[in-house]
Length: 86
Image (cartoon, rainbow, N blue to C red; front, side, top):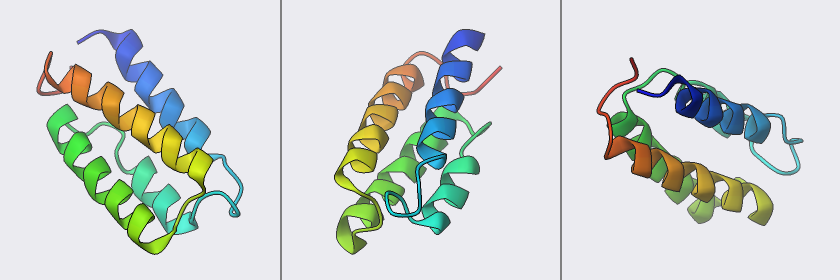
């Protein structure tokens, strides 16, 4: 697996997690940080769940939701290339 892709995904997670509390629920921040190092397919599944709960319970702002969606799309693309981080 391309180390740059791993770093890019982790950087996106870090940026989203640095958003103020008014943009993203602190419990979601904890869950996002726990995604690092997971196999891509598991990360994608967890992101599905996180995004669903964020929409249902309004746990993030529209901007943060868009960022989560971008992250999810990138993880899904990488998931097709490699099942695990190397």
